[in-house]
Image (cartoon, rainbow, N blue to C red):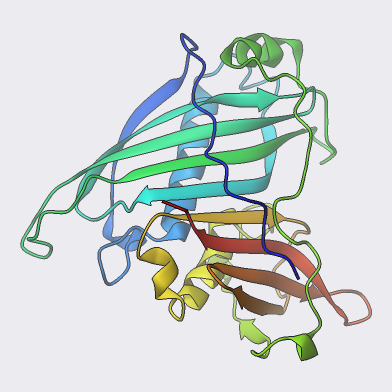
Length: 272
């Protein structure tokens, strides 16, 4: 089993390109015991920002359905509570049916009686691979109106899909740790009866308790969604540590009961 590809920083915004910006505030439901905003909290922020952004775009009615194929989160400096944060969202690259949407998060750290020691301001860079869908749930060509809005944001107009995580899980006998079950709750599911994107990262946070060293400095988390998970599905987590990388496969039974990968995850230190 090989680790994910070599770290490459996420691309910057095209000079002069338009972008969406908004301000938010960190809430206590998204932080861990060390006041750090968890990965599932960051994923929820990204969903909120995407919803707020598309609501003010001219193609909100022509292209209302989008699904995420991959999310990359680079935690360059953790966001902590209490903090205010601002976001910038723009199209980093696109093709006729999908886009890479970049979100930059800059947080201004504060103090209070629960967290009185000053901390650095948080900085998180993210990128998500979004696929445009039609009302029947099939990938669909981005409308002309949407293309007119997105094309000027980037000079990369030939985006192709390339996996960043190992999509195939190793056999259990090849690993030191046994598979563990991750119990889902009905509150983890959206109105379409699919597991919410942020809920996947709750399983990742459960695993990172035993790999706290990966969170001690800048780190990158990548999740690639391969199959939907519906209510009532049993979820098993397979994991492997390779040097400075934690690999995880979130697995569900197929029709014959054999486990297949629903999502692949990597969490890795970002080199200095």
